[in-house]
Image 1 (cartoon, rainbow, N blue to C red):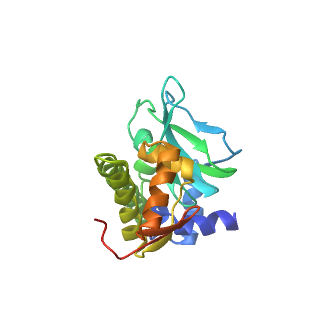
Image 2 (cartoon, rainbow, N blue to C red; image 1 turned 60 degrees about the vertical axis):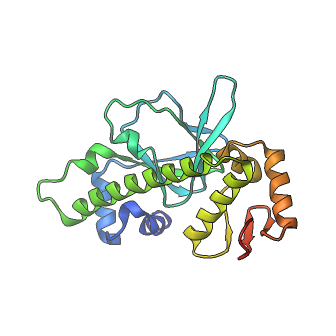
Length: 224
């Protein structure tokens, strides 16, 4: 429980809620902890959900797969972050994505009806959680729009630079780690892995960046 509470303190959904209040809320929110093995499906496209997941340990991927098994990665979700909130908040909505464990993970599922239905005393921390949930939904919408911006670039090089620029701005530094492996980044940007590696190698030779696995250092020199 202590490990779980330490993660919940870093989660946006419990932002501004004390540890004591969090413990009380866990009893009335119908939370359900579950564990999943690496590469196991947590939720599948076509499912209906009433609870959203909060990652306690490990990482999960939000993916779309076509009839032939081609994979499009929409997002990576790490400790303290949530997934499937939009679908849980839309009664009857059917998932058009799947959620897969990138590593062994522990997930806490929270019933959204218990969050949106305030208790008779309308306690302040319950109201705060509703505001936090709204902020989480808005953040996910912004991240989706960001991905659309990357994919809307005309060339593979421009897609890569658009993504790396956004990550540098998010980290507030020209040096950062990304959440994706090379294959996962290729799937996220909708490009071939070998072409992605070739472009990164060329940009490194041009002095635009340095890269080692998922660690990047961008140059201040403007790309021509």
